[in-house]
Length: 180
Length: 312
Image (cartoon, rainbow over all chains, first blue to last red; front, side, top):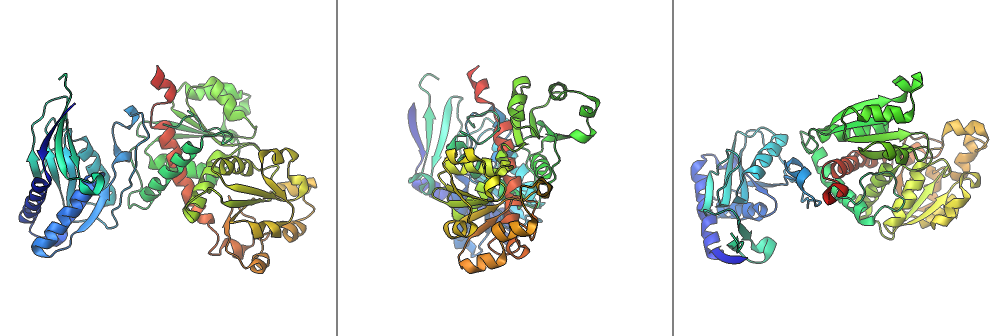
């Protein structure tokens, strides 16, 4: 396996700042926005966007987290017991603008499951998607509204995101199988 | 996934799997608090509830768990079935399985019936009570409720009070609690405590006050009124005086103790109404945890491939 750094802590920080500005720019009523992070790394990313937006215009957005395990379409093919972190959305989503936050957008299946699960918490007026990295190879018609960095990849490559909150260090790197 | 393909009994069940079920069940508790209490995890899975014996709460609890996982369910109860026309247990089960089902939840009056069922059908089998033998899902929801209250099971002192001889709840709780490192003391009329039970490593007492003094939690079993006529318990009044968890008895002890009851309760017999309604009772939490733990069991058993399939 080879290992190539794509983003360091500074670049991740700048991306989050830009994403936060774009989210505010795109939505006129910031008090209607709620941030929902998808486990695992979407959750700290949502917190960072929340504090950045508070820094920018003083609004403290509501924040929740989503665990999509029970909505996965590949559960029956997986052999291990999933790590279930649990969903925490302690407010109704009726009429809200939901910003889903995740680290990497790849096949789109996680996002499909997340949108499905969101319906259990009310009817949002809009759902938008913010990701730190879009690596392509979609298997469903899903596209992100806010992208930190587009990273075109090949099959056999993996984009890994590590964050201080979950992995002690901020970085985005590419893993490549030697054979491919 | 879980090491065993079926959930038949807790005797010899792996501790880590009991823990996995309890941990997963707490995640399903969160689903039950949502405005829409349903997830698609078992979409397309068909489950048959085979009830050869009457049951209200266990059947409703299983049915709700199945519906909230989006499984398709079929209910069968012995009174309305071909058993009345003389069909054998084996033929009934094989005929139902021939209709392409994935799992069977079964209650049967004969101990061992769910094990027997696995001999001639391929579906996942979950025991919802076999005679006076085991009732594993009840013990798991009891352990989940204790875990919720105390944050652990290891080292907990649990007293089980009542008719131990005829109680599948007692036996499954004894196995499960001991596997999870809890201590169990049984208490009841001596003629309703089977002699073999001491071999399981439990303490047996006939003094309920000693047990209250010792225990962190009491699981109070129903005294089945239908047994009163058999001469096993002299009278309801005498039972209440000797073993009933009365308001006065708990007052005398002046200690915090958690009160559980698997239901249905006979208020004023094995438990006083004031005790059942008090803050120390977690009886209704047990009911809610019953749905959550059955969701976890169904999810873990029907959602993934079995370990046997992995090898092939």
